[in-house]
Structures are given as C-alpha cells and as structure tokens.
Image (tube, rainbow, N blue to C red; front, side):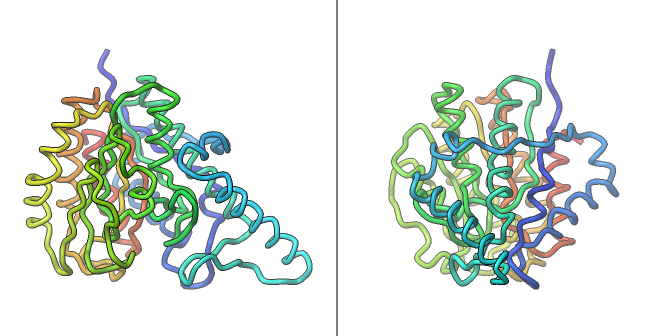
Length: 319
C-alpha cells in the first residue's frame, strides 16, 4: 500500500518560550501558520501529532554534554532568580535569550523532529512538517545563538543514521541566513550532504566557515530573486543530491527569504517555496522512498510566513 500522508508535529511547549516584547522570533509565528492552514483547509489533509520531549541521549548525537548542561543550568538559575524577584529572561547573545520555559520548548522542538523521523521511517507517514520553535540551525555543537538552542534538523539527521541505521541522508537549508550551527555539526561527515543558499554578506558574519566536501553552500547577494535561486539550485544542489542518493531528506525550512520579510533582503515568494519543495520531493521519491522531514526555522513576516508554509505543505501533501 502506498503511503501518502503528511504529518504535522508540534507541542504546546513551543509557544511558551519567548525572548521578550517585540522579539521577531515570537509564539505568534506558530499561530500565523496554524491559522493559515485552518483557513485554507490544508489542515484537514494533515495528520496532527503532539511530540514528546527528546531524550538527552538523543540531543547528545549533535551537541556536547557541556552545552546541554550549561543551557539547563542557565534555565535553573533563571527560575531561582525569578522566584527571588529577579529578571524574567537570561541573555545568551545580543539577539538570543531564554525564559523559564525555553528548556522544555527546546526539548519538545527536537522531540518533534525525532518523532517525525520515527514515523516517516516506520512508513506511518510519507513525510512530515514540524511546526516548532525555538528554531535550530544556528545552534552549534557547543553553544547556542541566533535564536537557536538545539539543532533540531542536525539531531534528527544524526538520529536517522545512528538509531535507524540509515547510511546516507541530506539536509536542505533554504533559510535566508546560513545554517552555521548545522555546518559546525555535520562538516566532514560524509554520510550527511548539506545543501544551502543564503544571503551573503549577512548574519552570521563570514558565512560558510568550512570547505568540507559534504557541504554545498551557495551564497547569494541581497535582492536575489526566486528565478535566480531556482537556477542555482538546479546547477549546484540537484547534481550533488543525485550523486549522494540520500535515504532520507531533512529540510531546514526558513521562510525569511520571502520578499515581504524585512529580516533579510532576498526576493522569494510562495511559488518559489513550492518549486523548491517539489524538487526536494522529487529527489526523495527517487532515492529516499519519499521520506522527508521538514522543520521550521526562520520566517518573521507573519502573513508571508503563513502563506509560505501553506505552499510548502501543499506540495508535501500532494494538494
């Protein structure tokens, strides 16, 4: 029997993490996505699932124990300080802070990526989208940053290899920012092919830091439009994905390259995200039994975010 189902993984804990008034990486992002999927009717075609928290042993597939312990300790200290009348947030970098719910949210975000991986590999679902926050692709092996704490996609990719015995997987990152954390974790691991485009120069400073042969990083200047991105994907990503023959594909699905999103200066629209998703899905059906797990990264213009995720999921779900 052919499986043609798309899972939708999330958890209420993902809405409780927040980094202060006016911060662009806010709980309302998930509301914008859910509202759009409901209004458009796309939600009716999905298999909604609530994820458990990831185990620390699975987090350690991509992160050092010292990083995990430091993040947990910072959350515990913040809770104690708040009980004593102290601040409600603890700063990690100028853009990134935690509240007392961040630890739980980060565990459930990673847990959603893991649960989606389990369900897709088991054949219960063909593919899945994880509506999760905090995002992950700036989280390095040893430290958090860039709104990210645990690298959800890198954890899931390592989990597919180590826990399920897959031999080759791919990570596709179409966020406007370079996935420096993912690069840090997977560079040199020839079981994982990472392909990405990103605005450059931009955050993080310096762009790609590794020339490891398993990385296909395509920096593009500000104001690059969708048709140019499509050409670059056909030129650089697709041949390498064909060569790698991944048994599963993971997507760092950032929607901040949309032309309405002032977090970046690229010119993508919903149809571009649909086109990219279709190319990934075609590749997955050729080499990966259709297995795709997509995890939310950036996307901060709420209307554009909702519309772009809808376009992305429509392709995943064959709608």
